[in-house]
Image 1 (cartoon, helix red, strand yellow):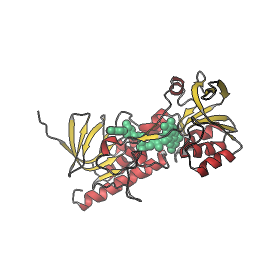
Image 2 (cartoon, rainbow, N blue to C red):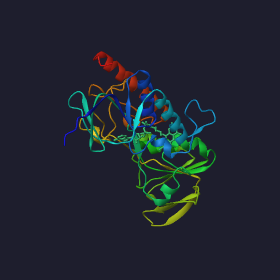
Image 3 (tube, rainbow, N blue to C red):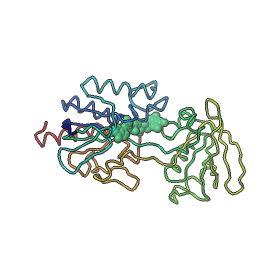
Image 4 (cartoon, rainbow, N blue to C red):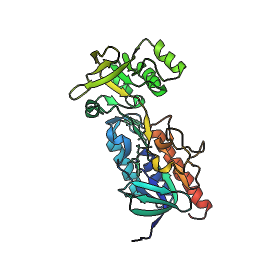
Length: 314
Ligand SMILES: Cc1cc2nc3c(=O)[nH]c(=O)nc-3n(C[C@H](O)[C@H](O)[C@H](O)COP(=O)(O)OP(=O)(O)OC[C@H]3O[C@@H](n4cnc5c(N)ncnc54)[C@H](O)[C@@H]3O)c2cc1C
């Protein structure tokens, strides 16, 4: 059975801070945006408790509540917010083609990709259970909660080294858990870590278990050379083993780096395909914050509006 595709002027894929901000701007510009929320309505902030660094909330805000506020603001101006996952795209001709949930066909004049990124985890039951209760994948977001406490961080790349150094400015002690006998980080970042008296690097070591019933109380580590386990007392456990941008379905059409982060023309949200814009963590390897995601969401809506206006479609 063939069905006619629904045509949308401005389609927003993803409902994190980038998607909702794009929606607020697009709706207020009368672009009748339609948003598909994906499997995680509200995005990454729905799995965290306190957000203390988003401007406008002097007392901090719970992540899910902040995302509910953004949703209401987008709805207030008429954004059509729908359940559904973009499962395929065809950006080879205009208007662009998008498939939702493998069965609904859409065409869109402008597409704003705001599909975010997912942190990689170790996969331990205790890590998942204590996520948000001492386990975090974002030192910049959550490091402040561990001032003058002891923390551990897992990872060996540049990001892990940078986050360990960041945490050392706040915590009283940082254990850096490194699986191999050396780090993958650049020489200069390694040196910064090794020179920092507050950081103790545990080489050839893996995490066996995060300890604690309702909050992190420690971590059981295992030395891979001696096979000995020992418990370290920490209140925070940070995982810095990388992120995966949610960009697979777009990769055949859009330029991306080797990790899958979509490339945009510097200073804009434009991708290499006319009428397709990217914002938030899916195109941001560097900052990965709610406020930067929101900022680029604004850029995407403004870029989309100018694109549609130039074509006489708006
Ligand atoms: C535990 C944790 C705590 C954090 N704390 C803070 C903090 O305190 N302050 C801060 O600034 N930042 C924090 N961050 C980072 C912040 O959450 C991200 O930078 C921000 O959410 C990125 O926004 P985004 O809109 O780009 O994407 P995301 O929030 O990742 O949202 C992506 C959206 O895209 C949707 N999606 C994905 N694929 C598809 C698809 N195929 N079709 C349709 N929809 C799709 C998802 O369902 C989701 O709605 C934290 C992150 C984590 C994980």
